[in-house]
Amino acid sequence: MSNAEKVERLRAKAKALHAALQLDEAEHLYRGILELHRTDLEARHMIGVLRLQQGRAAEALAILETLVLEAPDHADIRAQCGLARQDLGRRDEALADFDSALALKPGNVLSLLYRGNLLREAGLFAQALESYDRLLQVVPGFDEAWFCRGLTLPVTPRRWNAIPAALVLPSTVAPCCSSSNAMTKPLPLLKKRAQ
Image (cartoon, rainbow, N blue to C red; front, side):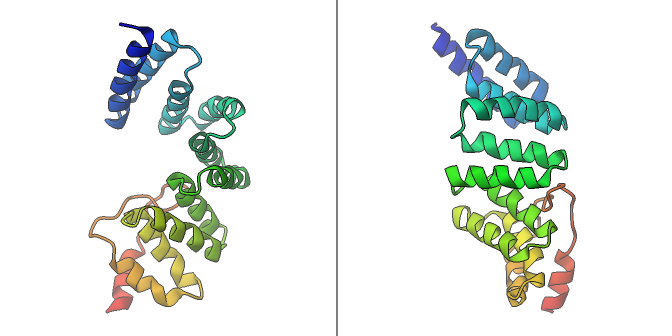
């Protein structure tokens, strides 16, 4: 078996473990890829993502910033950089990363969602709404985007759209709709207003 075949086999196993949130095991396999191909961009990117998922944003950012220099046109790496900066409280830089990612890939889902959340938290509701609306054009059934949009509409001139936006949600809603991933509970209030 060639090194390229070994790398692809390891990558498939690592992705499966990563998707199952078996982060340590996935990292072991990503590192195995790097033993065979030490400059593998995707394996290094995924190790950065793992660091974010482990709550180690500073380590993630160190990895991801290096990768941005190597691959300046990689939108997903820029989006992950934005998430790391956001976790470190560097919101303006995070917003700039999300905007850069969107300039490279206008439908970047993470960038659209977290950009909207940052803008909403900054009180820039019309811009946040634009971000959620763009996201819903890319992924029309994205529950979290509908929920965040519903949070944003009551404080915009388009507030009359808030109740229909909230009512399209299923009974379970994604647990994240803030840049800090804190669960918010405005949905019962919106449903109460609809009655």
